[in-house]
Image (cartoon, rainbow, N blue to C red; front, side):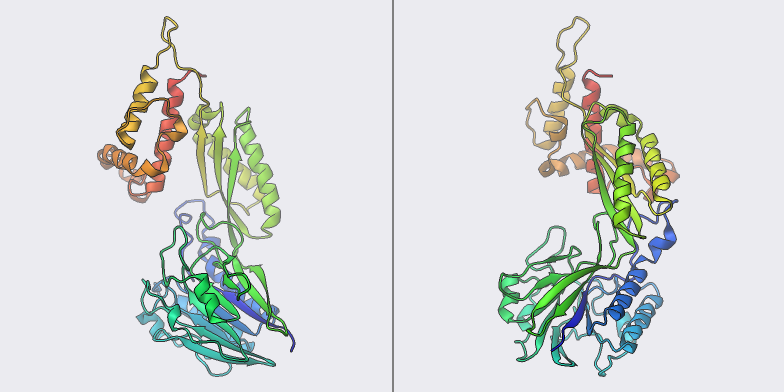
Length: 449
């Protein structure tokens, strides 16, 4: 038997907006807006170029109900390309494109053998294909509702003897940080079925989670990153099946917009221009990796540095300098998504009064107030980085919301809503403000430039 190939993709989120980008005036909106469509086109072209036997999509083809029918029609056109090339497709719905009226009304093309592209939501569906010496059975079930918290795996059938059995499932497995537990199951449960491959969706980070000696359990990841917390290459996995039914998995990037974090340690920086120099060097290296994709970096400056106060006071000019580097070095291929400052002031001796005596009053008072916000304790000697530990952040955030809420109502209209200086409902953004303000205040209370 000659080797055969199956393309495993998931989480296409067709026409989903790339978050937190299009609101910026200078964002490359056209490239951003069409990114998920271009990634899907890349997937179809890859399938044809690689002459794969089958394409499976493990949920979240769409990103919920469409604003219009064009989203669905675009997928119909791409599915038609595959089927006209003799490549069948098997798709399940996930939590973002669960069973709904709009998907009901869309007539999808049928596979070359006449089977349906979309697997049922009523029961576990099985599709059987014969590829010139390789018989493949795809077992899968679409979500009927968005919040599918039950165990879907228990209803999957036993493997069909003599065939390559592929399980298609949209799941969080036993849980991933930051992901809702949908259709939970364990790698051991999947291993016990005796299938040859598990094609999973829902987790956007590519990875394998099988029990040693059992079938591969693979998240292909999403085909296109949608935000800065989905950095790196995104795409699909092509599964090569040899004559013994053994698999080799190869990742293929499909994305057209690449998110990346650029973390710069300013601990050894002597001047502010050193920051821009480090960013320029990082860009030159990263541009070689991303080919012709649009590179969207977020720059985060960290470290304990004597430049801490200067950096804070020259925030806008530093950001402008980094954007200038993006333009000059990237030649239109780089767009700086955001600049974050997370540095700390070095610990120094306490301030002195006019007689030269040590004055701990201000620092001790700030420390006491911060500790009261955290847990009511009165301890002293807390460093700037420890003022709001992660476990106590909600207490500090509630206090900041209360203090700022009245002020925010008095801001001009152009600084409200989406353009607000700080979003009081965004916990992460609030914590960034608290950390920066605390570090700045402690820096001002200590001797220095």
